[in-house]
Each structure stands twice: as C-alpha cells, then as structure tokens.
Amino acid sequence: MNDQTTVSTATTPPGTGCSNTAPASGPTGSPAPPRSYTERSSAIGGHIVCGQRNFLDRAIFEGRLTLAQLGLVDAGRQDTPPTALGTWAHWYTQCSLRAQFKSVTGDFTFTGFDEAAAKAAAPPAESIRLAEQLFSSPAAAQQAVHNIAGLVIQRLPGKGHEWMAECAGEIPGILTGHIDLLTSDLEHLVDIKTTGQMPENGKMKPEHLWQLVAYALLVLHHTGKPPHYAHILYVDRHGDWVCRSKALDFYDVSGQALLRELYHWLEVTKNNAYAPTPVFGPHCDGAWCPYRQICRDASVPGAAAVVRRHEPVAVSSNPFTGP
Image 1 (cartoon, helix red, strand yellow):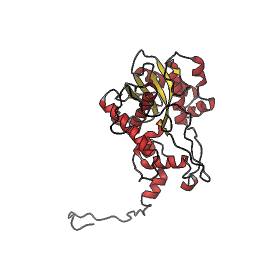
Image 2: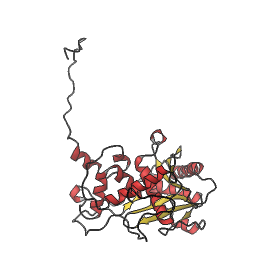
Image 3: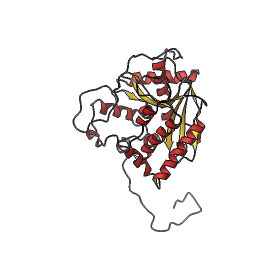
Image 4: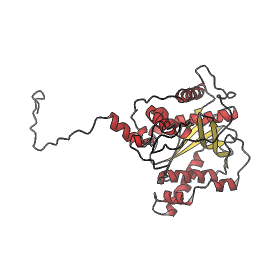
C-alpha cells in the first residue's frame, strides 16, 4: 500500500495465493544461494523498532551475510524454559476454550472444536519437561499453567464467542504469521504473552503493537476485512496476575492508518540492502535480539579504567576551591 491507499473492511493488500515458506536461521559457513525473505509477524516489532536487526536478519536469511562473519554460532531455534512454558500455557488455554485449531494457511472459517486437532497441536513431552524446570515440581508447573489459563479466560474480550486458535496467514513474499486466538466472527484478535514482568503503566510494548497490526493485516488479506479489535494479554508465568492491553480498533481511522503504515513499511524494506545504525533501548533484551552484543561492541566505546579513592578527601565549605 502507498500513502493514498485506503484500508477498509472491504479492501485487501496486493497479492494472492499462499505458500508455506518461512524464514530459517542463517548458515554458519559460506553464503547460501540467494533466497527471498518473508517477514514474520512475531519478529516484525523488533524489526520496526531497530532497523539494524531487520537488516541483519534479512541479510543472513538471504545469504548476503553469515553468522560466522558476525562472530556468532548457529545454535538453531532452541527452546528455553520460559518459551516452553509459554507454548504449553497457550495450548492449555486454547484447549480450555475449546478453540478450533487451524492447520491450513488462510483458513479463517470456524467449523467447531476438533479434539483430534487439539491433541495433535499439543507441545511435545520434552518441551513440557523443560518448562517444569521453572518450578519446584511438575505438579507446581501444572498448577501454574492451569492458573494462567484461568486468568486469560477471565480477561478475554468477547464473552460467549467461539474461538479459533493458531490461524495461519500469509501475504506471499511479504508477511506470514500464526494468530493465538481469533473469534469466529473476526470481532476480537488476542495475542497472549507469558512474562515475568508487568507491562509498564499497563501499556503494550511498541514491538507488540506492530505484531498485532501484522496479524490484523493477515486477517484483512484473507477475509477482506480486519478484526474489529486486537488485544495483548500479558499474564504472569506463575499465574499470579493478568493485564489486558487497551484494544486497537481497526474500524477506526487510527487503526486503519496503522494498517497502511505497516504495509508501506513492508514494501519499502522488502528490497532494502543498507545497514542502518543500531537503535539501543529496552527492546534489545526484551525482543531477544541475537545481535545486541555485536551492536554494543561496534557502537559503544570500550571499557574504561575505574579509579577508586584510597585516601580520605577533605571536604571544603567553599565549592569554588575544589577538593
């Protein structure tokens, strides 16, 4: 979309058809043959907040850079206890809602809860064992997951709605994504974030805002209209608290402007080959950026000597005489 394009409930961005092409981590050896990068909804917030991360992810995927050239080692997409817990809690919540798990890209039609599909989507046993490391016992982990699901369901918008889970969307060559929860009438879209820290002042992080806009853009592409409202549900990983962000309204002019802005950004950055300056901030750690140490080493002056006081310093009542 360009600046003159109007996003409404009856328009979709360019592009038809679907493929299941998804980005993978870059190689560690010599550059691979060129391939086209498709933006992921889960990563787009970090890419918008910091152009340097956007450039490096794309360059590595497309084979223009290697992790070895950056002094990094490809460890693959390794699960961690917090991410494993998030996956488990998501699935448990979706099952508790009797949400329909969707497996076909572009399928946003609700046909009812399918227990077999729900069981097929269950996290593997080794992922659950990894999540249990955060707790004193497997029973404590199960209780936390149960508490998380209860809190999320308590704060879900759209009471009485039927829900779909893991809806997959794709704008070919531009954007892909999987949506945690979407009501059958497309009224409410919800992304769940398990976390150990409350959102500052109850507000969603900027990178999470753009993730919601990306999901809404996928719904718009496949159905002809965006979801009406989109929310982030931040929930404590121990199940002690939950915070539902203020909704984004995509039927409002402000929400439609966000859709236009994101699509324009996707088009502009598609063939962007320059390396911008790193943008430092909380997102460096919060967005789990793998390049944060590289940026700091390259852009921030090296360590300086620390001089400690060994002798008492006389204090003068006259500030102009100095110590």
